[in-house]
Image 1 (tube, rainbow, N blue to C red):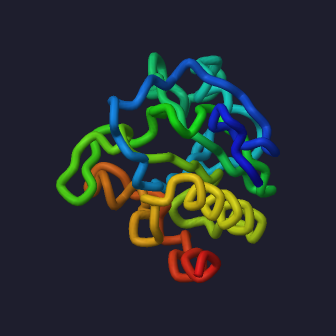
Image 2: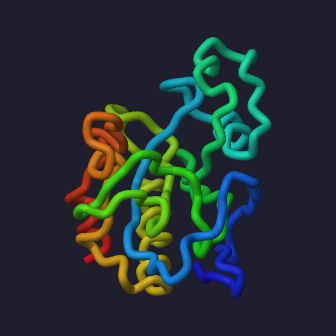
Length: 181
């Protein structure tokens, strides 16, 4: 796994979105945020997540999508249940994944973080293929952005407590961080 000169993974699927903007000048990328998502809630497969991140989701297609109307969100990458990585935003740009957030007293985590979505839910175990892909992706990110260390890899729940719960109790932090050691 390598990054090209435009900060895209050379060996992943690219699905560019308009839901990003430039990071503030001089900001060092220093945080990795792990999320989860499933659309509809608790269902896996299909391309609804990709449609959401690329502003193509038909919000009339499912009752769960009503709250997503006019929402413009993205993540840098999505890892599906089969461990396949889709990248939406180059890592040097600001994806819109964290929302109202704070880490170690610093707000606006989108400014200095990379967001990775896992297809899943808070309480459904993630797949071995997802952990393998996440480990490989995280190692590459840590190589290219050395300010991201193991102690600067967090869940969405850690930067938006009370508002977000992902990646949830199903995410095995000890196992994942052991893969990085």
